Length: 401
Image (cartoon, rainbow, N blue to C red):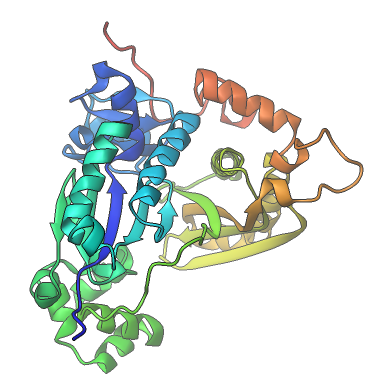
């Protein structure tokens, strides 16, 4: 007889960047920590409890938590910690699907005779990450990837939660609608305007009603998820299809110079992350949100893959110019930039004439030199001229001995 079990683990490191900083500097432990420059890249739970959130502007974050200690990001340290954690994942099971630098799905079905029930496997995994890497991690255990991810979100921080197959709806239905995959702030607000606040209330609606409110694709997906129907399985070997970042810039008004400064900062961050991950990409995507909540997306594909800051920035500026009339008419509230069609930098053939071996593939000699300076002295040690004199949002106070 076939028995359905909760054998999917969603393992998610807690406040990853901030946790690495607290691990490496004992003076930061138990204190509110913010990682970032003009935008919060990560916040410790001590800061989160005071309202600080990822992607929040630095000035707003310090207004909420003036006692926060601000540290510049150290991408090389985060990459090293991620590799160590993923080594633990792959030592636990070969069925590992990485989702980002700090989270993954693991399928432990079939391991119960060797390693015990999934919950025991999850407990050992958490203990090993704590002992071997020095970081807290939360694990959700469930029958599907969707439910496992929801479970880990509920269990945070530094927790473990199993959703048994016979208790899925009892667990899911009391949760807020934004716990469903694909429900962001705008969709959640739209559902709340119809008096729909919980997943159970979504599940009580006919699929046709959700389709009429949210559109065919999203309505059908949310109807299925609200009934705990999600067929996705763990896929081994799949890597991220894009690397990107976005920044909310408020309702303005914004000058073309201030928008360009924001674009420069985002491109610097995205291309540096690409080079740290040894990835190159061919397609640049620009996403904009306007004051009337409408959106625009534009893309450009290069004839060759690149991680060059200059090339990506030139493409983004070209795309931004193509939608300048929309920006002028509607106003701008958010800028997002990503690079897609990614590949490993060591499989890319550089165009003639050849640069120094390996340098073109990772974005050029200047980019590599700047990355080294930033890794050693912090992201704010060198900055673009367009950013000089502009509020970077966060200062870096000295730590007491």
